[in-house]
Length: 353
Image (tube, rainbow, N blue to C red; front, side):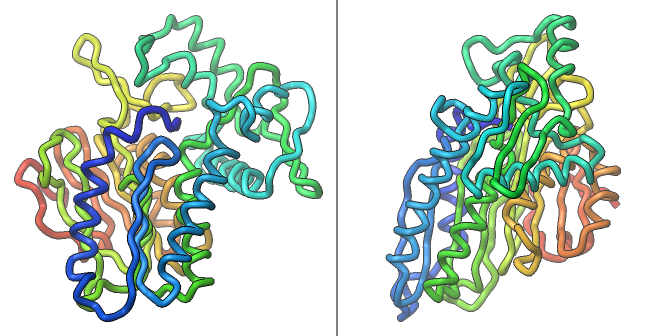
């Protein structure tokens, strides 16, 4: 649930997805504009078609950079860092965007019975996965960190957008929601500029497909093969239209020790990286659902921690959600709607009936 070291791992995937999604864009008579960059430690690709396409894309990048500065836990001057620095001491007034992300995260922590919890900051720092000091901490250290992890200790004061963490040493991390929130914010900008066709791609882990491609078809998105870095080697292809799509996996940041893979997605109950028989999962959320981008981000973490069976059961309680889960033995679990839009399944995997 952190942003460190995403750019390198996602660059190729983001580029390939753009090619798949925008095939034939140049053939359309409507003005279009594309721009790539780096923010939130990932590669960003925004494309739009319409008379105000350039304005929409430029404003989209500006908004993403603003959100990055507000929500980055590694920046001591960010709103998130100010919240963490004041843990156990006092409320901190924050930007409404940060307040909205934290409030939404707490709500889904409650809905998932703590399977999703942005207060895992102490675990992220302790394990330090993705950095030179990554290691398996002593059990006593994990036990101590767990005392500081509880979404119920996030105190919200809506009247002035203030937040407090109840106990000293607590720390939140918004890496599991901020990119999805950014997708939603860019989508609002696109709507204000009357964009009816485009792709918002936050490093291929979080994206939104607006309308249809220039050929009048849904956007074909390649889902990364969780055990292959070969260009063009997908788990499969999913077609989306006016939907948000997020993917999480144990391949993003991890280390292997004694044959066990330890990834960056933590189980808040155990203090260890999630071990619920999931390699990766993808969530598609219909654009009619409020906070579609942020919700798709949150649910990929929820499902990853819950595991295939419980994860599918959970997402089926929410309207407008499609889901695919790849288990450690290569079985693909899917909701019926996801299955209807999925094709070109890689031979390394099999459908769980």
